[in-house]
Length: 59
Image (cartoon, rainbow, N blue to C red; front, top):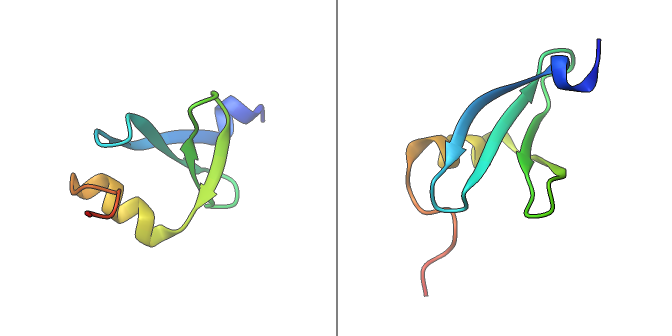
Protein backbone atom coordinates (compact mmCIF):
# COMPACT_ATOMS: atom_id res chain seq x y z
CA UNK A 1 0.00 0.00 0.00
CA UNK A 2 1.43 3.38 -0.99
CA UNK A 3 1.79 6.12 1.61
CA UNK A 4 -1.01 8.16 0.06
CA UNK A 5 -3.32 5.10 0.14
CA UNK A 6 -2.58 4.44 3.81
CA UNK A 7 -3.47 7.97 4.95
CA UNK A 8 -7.03 9.23 5.20
CA UNK A 9 -7.97 12.83 5.88
CA UNK A 10 -10.15 13.00 8.98
CA UNK A 11 -10.30 16.74 9.57
CA UNK A 12 -8.97 20.20 8.96
CA UNK A 13 -7.75 22.89 11.33
CA UNK A 14 -9.06 26.24 10.13
CA UNK A 15 -6.84 27.97 12.69
CA UNK A 16 -3.65 26.44 11.34
CA UNK A 17 -4.88 25.83 7.77
CA UNK A 18 -3.56 22.27 7.97
CA UNK A 19 -5.12 18.85 7.43
CA UNK A 20 -5.36 16.12 10.05
CA UNK A 21 -4.84 12.56 8.80
CA UNK A 22 -4.86 9.01 10.18
CA UNK A 23 -2.87 6.01 9.01
CA UNK A 24 -5.19 3.16 8.10
CA UNK A 25 -2.46 0.64 8.90
CA UNK A 26 -1.14 1.67 12.33
CA UNK A 27 -3.66 4.29 13.48
CA UNK A 28 -1.09 7.06 13.95
CA UNK A 29 -2.46 10.59 13.61
CA UNK A 30 -0.62 13.13 11.46
CA UNK A 31 -0.84 16.83 10.72
CA UNK A 32 0.40 18.48 7.54
CA UNK A 33 3.18 21.03 7.93
CA UNK A 34 3.82 24.41 6.31
CA UNK A 35 6.42 22.79 4.05
CA UNK A 36 4.14 20.04 2.79
CA UNK A 37 5.44 17.36 5.16
CA UNK A 38 3.78 15.45 7.96
CA UNK A 39 4.29 15.46 11.70
CA UNK A 40 2.80 12.93 14.15
CA UNK A 41 0.28 14.33 16.65
CA UNK A 42 -1.59 13.03 19.69
CA UNK A 43 -5.22 11.96 19.77
CA UNK A 44 -5.93 14.95 22.04
CA UNK A 45 -4.57 17.33 19.42
CA UNK A 46 -6.72 15.64 16.78
CA UNK A 47 -9.84 16.25 18.87
CA UNK A 48 -8.85 19.87 19.39
CA UNK A 49 -8.28 20.36 15.65
CA UNK A 50 -11.60 18.77 14.77
CA UNK A 51 -13.49 20.80 17.39
CA UNK A 52 -12.89 24.08 15.62
CA UNK A 53 -11.41 25.66 18.74
CA UNK A 54 -8.13 27.58 18.33
CA UNK A 55 -5.10 25.30 18.49
CA UNK A 56 -2.71 28.13 19.35
CA UNK A 57 -2.67 29.16 23.05
CA UNK A 58 -4.19 32.57 23.72
CA UNK A 59 -1.97 35.37 25.00
